[in-house]
Length: 63
View 1 (spheres, rainbow, N blue to C red):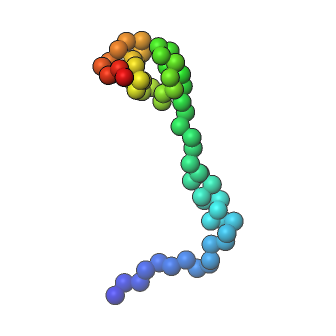
View 2 (view 1 turned 120 degrees about the vertical axis):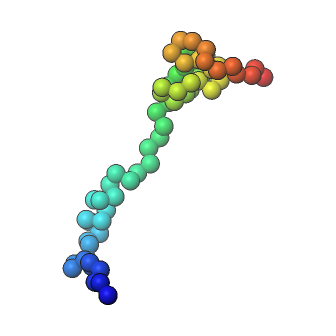
View 3 (view 1 turned 90 degrees about the vertical axis):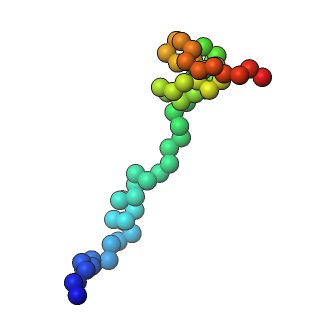
């Protein structure tokens, strides 16, 4: 039977929390669509008008 490695010392709360310092959630970076001025993700097709990089790439149904 093989032995598993176990920590020799308890990890302190400070060390544990420092390791988790990059685990926070970030808000999405929304930009304004130059065609319809709706909020959209950078480098993504606009969901409201279907434009990307100055040209229409998706046909979006109008309500």
